[in-house]
Amino acid sequence: MKLWDKDSEELTNFTTHFSFAIDSQKRSEYGDGIAFFLAPVGSKIPLLTKGGSTMGFSRDDQALDSVDNPFVAVEFDIYSNDYLDPPGEHVGIDLNSLKSVANISWFSNTAIKEGKINEAWITYNSSSYNLSVVFTGLRGNVPVRQFLSAHVDLSQFLPDMVTFGFSASTGNSSAIHTIYSWDFSSSLEIDETTTNPKDPVSSPNVPAPKQRKNNTLGLAMGLGFGGFGLVGGLAMVLSSLRKRNRRDKGEDDDVLDDYIDEEFERGRGPKKFSYNELARATNDFNDKEKLGQGGFGVVYKGLLRDSNTYVAVKRVVKGSKQGIKEYASEVKTISQLRHRNLVQLIGWCHERKELLLVYDFMPNGSLDSHLFQESVLIWELRYKVAQGLASALLYLQEEWEQCVLHRDIKSSNIMLDSNFNAKLGDFGLARLVDHAKGSTTTDIAGTKGYIAPEYFTTGKATKESDVYSFGIVALEIASGRRAINHMAIEDHQVVTEMWVRELHRRGELFEVADPRLGGNFDELQMERLIIVGLWCVHPDYNLRPSIRQAIQVLNFEALLPLLPSDMPGPT
Image (tube, rainbow, N blue to C red; front, side, top):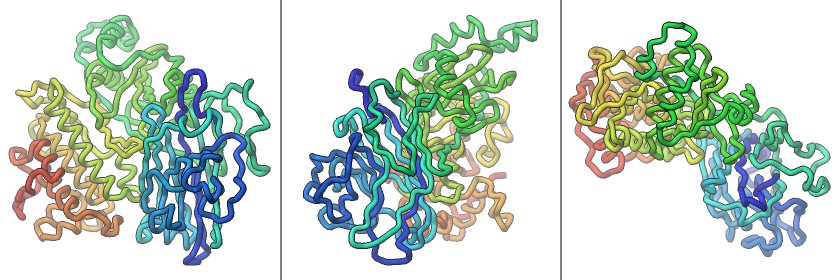
């Protein structure tokens, strides 16, 4: 793989996903683990390597500083060496040393004894020098997802051309290490005229990687694939489009004109892309690059060659009037927003009767895909997501030049970046109002289960109605239950808000906690998240907190509010 370019010093981005198992065959003692690594082309297992502690990366006497054999690795270490490792099984990021620069305990003991399959996603973002790892484990027989990251400039540790793959060792113990599937892609192109075909290390059973037609380096073993859900559904009306009196139906359908160009190019931030740029980035909108599909478009993963950046490209369905309105509003208005907890619109294109929007790529997909699927998002990340979403809402309601009413806050519209930072997206239903007014009367919009009761009756979207939606998401994060739970056995459990309210009335607050967490959560944080959620969904919107007040409670900067135990539900 070309890790960085000698002339431009540009670093590659890469992402890999693999499924694997470490099987101790029911033995309680095992070693040593498996690692994904990057090393100089032609690297070999060094001499003077006897034990399993170095996993074949360095000499035993250079385990702490492998000056002769540089490497970068993500280790899944199942044996604790006193001078190198923390106690117990762990995952670590290694930079020329088996003493990790970052590590975290790995919930894997049961999986190792039973030989169960785990998964890992490793992503490197060259612009932020962020190496992140998402991996699965078992906590009390419950699948969980864990996270680890480190800030590292790979060009300071490795040459421009590297070999990558897996290494495993057992030391004096035993275990079977198996890779079941593997997918890898990187962004820098390889100049085949200067690449020595004799250098790469290859296996007689695994063919050497070949250059793909879309100029990304790909390797696959088995049927590995990486998929990330991305849910669209933008729908906002741009008034300037309505005012254009076009009598001819064909003209009404055609938004690709000079007037729209002028309007869009007055905006700040996003750039105009050519159709050819985006077609090339998505491999001509190949189905293999599809991330998800919303009401008015399909979203593809793309790689912008000029900036060496992964993006998400939304292709609006042709002929969709609502899609046209959505497209225009995203570019013209919402593109001006800038906050660390908002999905960023970075570009747009309307050529060849195509409407395309370009967003930051979110490798960990949407929040709902982590809350309501088999694997479990650990508590630390859940609380981090709740705080990030609240921060985004504070920006929209109080910190930008106008008040932004989102009107569709829900778990599927909250995206997660490589570090599991929350990013609120989908502003298609948003409205801008003056801070002094703080509300707007519109057609009712949003998603059932997240819409405030007074919004149904008055048709007036307010800051308080968005706070209500935030409260529903907070309860989803705490409970692991959808806002409307169609799988509920009893009627009172169908609406999660009502179910939580009943448990609060009975003084059984911690019964709300997602049982898949197995009790592994901070009780003070859990209590605050549930109480804040109930506070935000108060049936009387005048008694709901501002989002700033909610943040103060979540951050332990204010006391918990005293909510009445018999607080009625929405009517």
